[in-house]
Image 1 (cartoon, rainbow, N blue to C red):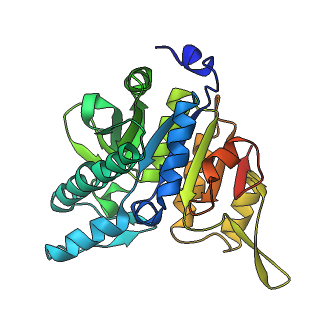
Image 2 (tube, rainbow, N blue to C red):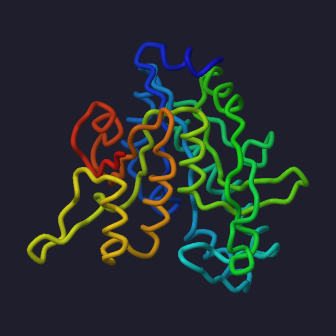
Length: 271
């Protein structure tokens, strides 16, 4: 199935949703019911998920040290075994089960399957180890799964032509998938209401922000820590057919339907 034919289906809103593992665990059943309703109405959701806290928990249980550089997990082969086990195994299948329990249809896979997400070492790999940046996405795998009537649920583990695995930041992976499949929207589901900005000493949600304004907020220290890779991935993915990235709180009732319907929720990042 081509991307054009997907987009022409009734209600055929193609969109990529990124969700962190800790956020997923806290999402109510109604979130997955909303996702099912969107699928039934002809929308085309694609999910890319993370799982940082669960990875950290499993590493701790196994007595393997865990550290970060600029929000990226330092990844050795030993750490990567646990990353893959957690992301491609327990978390991926937990998401698939929740979608199917709500009446939806989902198929879980990782970026390794079918060379779905091709990767190479990030520029600072001497500091962070086997962390990858995306060099390509096999879009036809994603569109093929959609054509069969399933929601693709993708774990962000990439691979190179030699078969070397890479740990890929989930926000970065989601941005790349959105770019390669030509999704007009990417929705980042988090446990925060959006990008916060201080006005008169009070934190408020920015309803809309441009790429240039984000750079100013990072430089000014208002966007920091783990939020930086989120917004940088968002900026990277605003290209081609991707016109906006929306950061929302997954606990908001029917948040996906409302955002896709144009309601002003969370923060919309635009060119």
